[in-house]
Length: 293
Ligand SMILES: [Zn+2]
Image 1 (cartoon, rainbow, N blue to C red):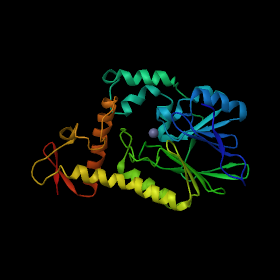
Image 2 (cartoon, helix red, strand yellow):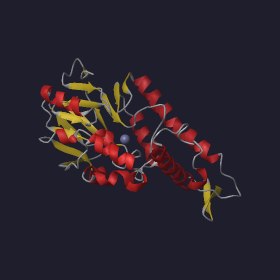
Image 3 (cartoon, rainbow, N blue to C red):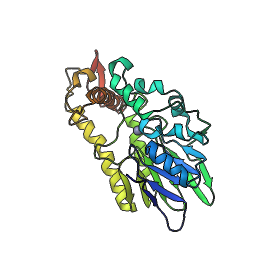
């Protein structure tokens, strides 16, 4: 497939959307956001653009896979995700699995040819990165990972949402550094911004303020649906824990060939809901599980 580079603004010439194979990217001046478009696409991109700085939205393998092909660039990410980008052996443990439990995942990582990447600098919430006459704002949006960041260019009103990806699956918070509480707040942060174009890490472009806000709201509502599904198993008498809720298709309506990873993620996601219910005093601890308050 040919590399698809799309200019996003007539007024600001140096902002581009790149539809990728594993995840989507954005170019803004000498900056590239995320490197999961594919190795072939990165090689082609380097012929057309001078990429001096790479911003990583988060540590997930499908967003950092092309780092190794950009050796001359400086890499920046949030401090909370830095240690995993620099030590990719941690990835599987952050999905709640031991390497021996799911060797196929290690093969997939091998297939991505991900290498440890030295992070040259840290980005922080509300930091403005000046790129020629443009102002790219960092929005720390934890929940998906602890250091997940979105980006918003203030003049063109173009946003990069990474894995607040507006998919029908809804938010994914199945890593040990995830948080459903933070994810909700992060979506709300984005809802306050008047974005004209939003780039999803996996679902392409969303254009128009109204559509973007509605899509964020619909995406957030998946969290409430998950709340209700989990709560329907709880009672005031018999305590249950995440082990009791395994293999019930609570989050994944259908398990695929990567069921081991999906069920590990599902267990973590259910536990993140328990944390939220505890905080909101909807449930309480009883013996080795939870009951409704
Ligand atoms: Zn991700």
